[in-house]
Image (cartoon, rainbow, N blue to C red):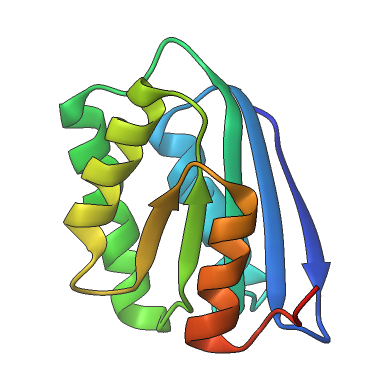
Length: 129
C-alpha cells in the first residue's frame, strides 16, 4: 500500500493518501514515521479512498489499534480524520477508530470537505475556503 504525505507546517497539518491493499503493519509504520519526524502533533487527514482488497480482518484491525495505542500513549497525537469511499473500508475504519477513540480523537468520513470542515471547526487548523 503506497502511502504519500504532504506536510503543511504553517497549518500543522498532514495530508496522507494511501492506495492499494492495506496492512496493520503499514498503519503502524506510518504512525512511527510521523512520530520519528515529529509530526504526530499535527492534525491529519487520511485519504484511504484508494484502498483495495484484501481488506483487514477484525483481528488485524484489533492488533493494529493495540500497536497504535501503545505509540499514541507516549506521543499525544492530534486529531485525525479518515476519508473513505466504500462500505467495507468505512466499517473497517470505524472499528479502528472505536478501538482508539479513548486515547486520541479520530473520525471517519465519506466526504473530504466534511473531514476538513470538522478539523476546521473543532481544531482551527485549516483556514476556511
